[in-house]
Image (cartoon, rainbow, N blue to C red):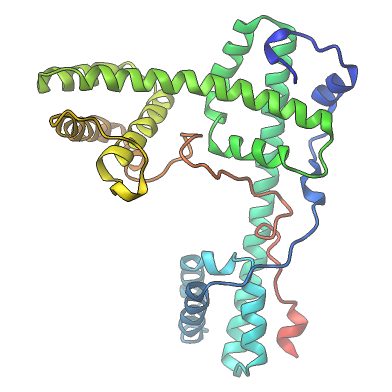
Length: 321
């Protein structure tokens, strides 16, 4: 493997990949897979969407609002199959008009998603390039400083991209070695940050006085930047979810025997809610966030050519036939 902390590599071929890899990825060359069969839920939502749209064909503003509420249906890889089935089973004139509107909306959304995914991929490649250059040109401290400066980019989107690119069958062996080295360095950096968060939580939970626990929590939060607070909240959320809210049959985490521990943990969550509300961070505690790269086991990346981004839609000629 490649040690990012060891300075310049002896392999000129790998170095060439690091510095001169183009901003267009081989990810877009993957063979297209047949679209999956849509679930019953998606089929039902499509029928509801179509029914609502038929009633609002003359109201463009309402049409846009309706379509926005059903993006999960419009961007589902099986959307084409749903539409074809509907047309083959005898859609009436109004339904056909509504389907044409939906088809155009899918094209707009897919184009926007593909452009967004392309921009994200370019940023991820640039992040990889910066990390590799830092590892080549200086000591470990230089790489650590670089990772600190890149911290806002080192989220689940970036980790998902690394995993996606490493498993890309068209990627060269040398490029995979580079990606694995970057992933190891980033994981190591993030793990240290995670350990720091857990250390803060552990210290607070070991304090007996509830007022002292809240005071120590407040002091730590006040000293955190917004970005640092985001990751701390993500770590705390994972702890709360595993120890406070997860049903026993769905978690392998052993809860402490201390009968007062869960009460302290609940108090800690209440205190965190109270302290982060003025900084508009409540959504990070109540909803899943991409600030925690380890929040999901199955992180992924949508490439500009994926079945979602390029959402295969029914050709307009089919609609008019």
